[in-house]
Image 1 (spheres, one colour):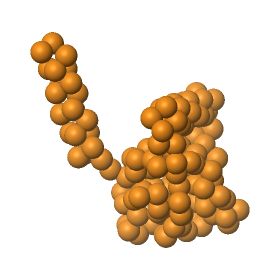
Image 2 (cartoon, rainbow, N blue to C red):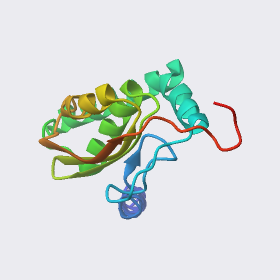
Image 3 (cartoon, helix red, strand yellow):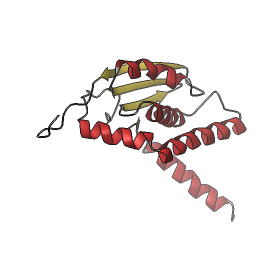
Image 4 (spheres, rainbow, N blue to C red):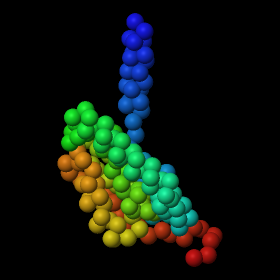
Length: 159
Protein backbone atom coordinates (compact mmCIF):
# COMPACT_ATOMS: atom_id res chain seq x y z
CA UNK A 1 0.00 0.00 0.00
CA UNK A 2 2.86 2.38 0.81
CA UNK A 3 4.21 1.96 -2.73
CA UNK A 4 0.84 2.20 -4.41
CA UNK A 5 -0.01 5.72 -3.24
CA UNK A 6 3.17 7.39 -4.62
CA UNK A 7 2.67 5.48 -7.88
CA UNK A 8 -0.89 6.73 -8.21
CA UNK A 9 0.10 10.31 -7.40
CA UNK A 10 2.97 10.31 -9.88
CA UNK A 11 0.71 8.82 -12.56
CA UNK A 12 -1.81 11.62 -12.09
CA UNK A 13 0.97 14.22 -12.33
CA UNK A 14 2.36 12.69 -15.53
CA UNK A 15 -1.08 12.69 -17.15
CA UNK A 16 -1.64 16.29 -16.04
CA UNK A 17 1.66 17.46 -17.50
CA UNK A 18 1.01 15.67 -20.79
CA UNK A 19 -2.42 17.28 -21.07
CA UNK A 20 -0.94 20.77 -20.64
CA UNK A 21 1.68 20.24 -23.32
CA UNK A 22 2.44 23.10 -25.69
CA UNK A 23 4.78 23.46 -28.64
CA UNK A 24 8.45 24.05 -27.93
CA UNK A 25 9.74 27.51 -28.81
CA UNK A 26 13.29 28.83 -29.14
CA UNK A 27 12.27 32.18 -27.64
CA UNK A 28 9.27 33.76 -25.97
CA UNK A 29 8.70 35.82 -29.12
CA UNK A 30 8.46 32.74 -31.38
CA UNK A 31 5.04 31.88 -32.82
CA UNK A 32 2.68 30.10 -30.43
CA UNK A 33 2.07 27.33 -32.95
CA UNK A 34 3.34 26.20 -36.35
CA UNK A 35 0.34 27.70 -38.18
CA UNK A 36 0.70 31.22 -36.76
CA UNK A 37 1.80 34.05 -39.04
CA UNK A 38 5.44 34.99 -38.46
CA UNK A 39 6.91 38.48 -38.20
CA UNK A 40 10.46 39.77 -38.10
CA UNK A 41 11.72 40.34 -34.55
CA UNK A 42 12.89 43.74 -33.40
CA UNK A 43 16.65 44.22 -33.08
CA UNK A 44 16.36 44.33 -29.28
CA UNK A 45 14.42 41.06 -29.19
CA UNK A 46 16.83 39.36 -31.61
CA UNK A 47 19.84 40.53 -29.61
CA UNK A 48 18.36 39.29 -26.32
CA UNK A 49 17.44 35.93 -27.86
CA UNK A 50 20.94 35.56 -29.28
CA UNK A 51 22.59 36.42 -25.94
CA UNK A 52 20.43 33.84 -24.17
CA UNK A 53 21.09 31.14 -26.78
CA UNK A 54 24.87 31.51 -26.88
CA UNK A 55 25.49 31.68 -23.14
CA UNK A 56 27.70 28.84 -21.90
CA UNK A 57 25.18 27.97 -19.21
CA UNK A 58 22.32 27.64 -21.71
CA UNK A 59 24.39 25.57 -24.14
CA UNK A 60 25.45 23.21 -21.35
CA UNK A 61 21.84 22.90 -20.20
CA UNK A 62 20.59 22.08 -23.71
CA UNK A 63 23.28 19.46 -24.31
CA UNK A 64 22.68 17.94 -20.88
CA UNK A 65 18.92 17.71 -21.53
CA UNK A 66 19.48 16.00 -24.88
CA UNK A 67 21.98 13.50 -23.42
CA UNK A 68 19.68 12.70 -20.49
CA UNK A 69 16.71 11.99 -22.76
CA UNK A 70 18.82 9.85 -25.09
CA UNK A 71 20.19 7.86 -22.14
CA UNK A 72 16.71 7.35 -20.73
CA UNK A 73 15.40 6.18 -24.10
CA UNK A 74 18.40 3.87 -24.62
CA UNK A 75 17.77 2.23 -21.24
CA UNK A 76 14.09 1.69 -21.97
CA UNK A 77 14.86 0.36 -25.46
CA UNK A 78 13.07 3.16 -27.27
CA UNK A 79 16.02 5.08 -28.66
CA UNK A 80 14.52 5.39 -32.17
CA UNK A 81 10.85 5.56 -31.15
CA UNK A 82 10.61 8.78 -29.17
CA UNK A 83 7.78 10.58 -27.43
CA UNK A 84 6.55 13.64 -29.31
CA UNK A 85 7.29 15.94 -26.37
CA UNK A 86 10.88 14.66 -26.18
CA UNK A 87 11.38 15.25 -29.89
CA UNK A 88 9.95 18.76 -29.65
CA UNK A 89 12.16 19.65 -26.73
CA UNK A 90 15.34 18.16 -28.18
CA UNK A 91 14.88 19.69 -31.63
CA UNK A 92 14.06 23.05 -30.04
CA UNK A 93 17.21 22.85 -27.94
CA UNK A 94 19.34 21.91 -30.92
CA UNK A 95 17.96 24.81 -32.97
CA UNK A 96 18.27 27.27 -30.09
CA UNK A 97 21.90 26.38 -29.47
CA UNK A 98 22.92 26.46 -33.14
CA UNK A 99 20.76 29.22 -34.61
CA UNK A 100 21.08 32.23 -32.31
CA UNK A 101 18.50 35.00 -32.80
CA UNK A 102 16.03 32.55 -34.37
CA UNK A 103 12.43 32.54 -33.25
CA UNK A 104 11.16 29.06 -34.01
CA UNK A 105 8.31 26.85 -32.86
CA UNK A 106 8.64 23.07 -33.00
CA UNK A 107 5.80 20.56 -33.13
CA UNK A 108 6.24 16.78 -33.39
CA UNK A 109 3.80 14.04 -34.21
CA UNK A 110 4.85 10.41 -34.61
CA UNK A 111 8.41 11.34 -35.56
CA UNK A 112 7.44 14.07 -38.04
CA UNK A 113 8.77 17.42 -36.84
CA UNK A 114 7.15 20.64 -38.10
CA UNK A 115 9.05 23.89 -37.62
CA UNK A 116 7.77 27.46 -38.07
CA UNK A 117 9.04 30.95 -37.28
CA UNK A 118 11.86 33.23 -38.35
CA UNK A 119 15.63 33.07 -38.77
CA UNK A 120 17.85 36.06 -39.53
CA UNK A 121 19.68 34.61 -42.57
CA UNK A 122 19.22 32.21 -45.48
CA UNK A 123 22.22 30.21 -44.21
CA UNK A 124 20.39 29.55 -40.93
CA UNK A 125 17.22 28.58 -42.80
CA UNK A 126 19.23 26.03 -44.80
CA UNK A 127 20.57 24.50 -41.55
CA UNK A 128 17.15 23.98 -39.90
CA UNK A 129 16.30 20.56 -41.45
CA UNK A 130 19.84 19.23 -41.02
CA UNK A 131 19.98 20.15 -37.34
CA UNK A 132 16.54 18.66 -36.67
CA UNK A 133 17.50 15.38 -38.39
CA UNK A 134 20.44 14.99 -35.97
CA UNK A 135 18.02 14.12 -33.16
CA UNK A 136 17.30 10.40 -32.78
CA UNK A 137 13.75 9.49 -33.63
CA UNK A 138 13.12 12.30 -36.15
CA UNK A 139 11.70 10.60 -39.24
CA UNK A 140 10.90 13.67 -41.32
CA UNK A 141 11.27 17.44 -41.02
CA UNK A 142 8.71 19.87 -42.41
CA UNK A 143 10.03 23.42 -42.50
CA UNK A 144 6.48 24.56 -42.97
CA UNK A 145 6.50 28.23 -42.29
CA UNK A 146 10.05 29.39 -41.60
CA UNK A 147 10.96 32.74 -43.11
CA UNK A 148 14.17 34.68 -43.37
CA UNK A 149 13.45 37.87 -41.46
CA UNK A 150 16.38 40.00 -40.36
CA UNK A 151 15.68 41.97 -37.21
CA UNK A 152 13.90 45.27 -37.70
CA UNK A 153 14.87 48.45 -35.87
CA UNK A 154 12.98 49.03 -32.64
CA UNK A 155 10.54 51.93 -33.08
CA UNK A 156 11.90 55.27 -31.86
CA UNK A 157 15.44 53.96 -31.72
CA UNK A 158 18.33 54.86 -34.06
CA UNK A 159 19.54 52.16 -36.43
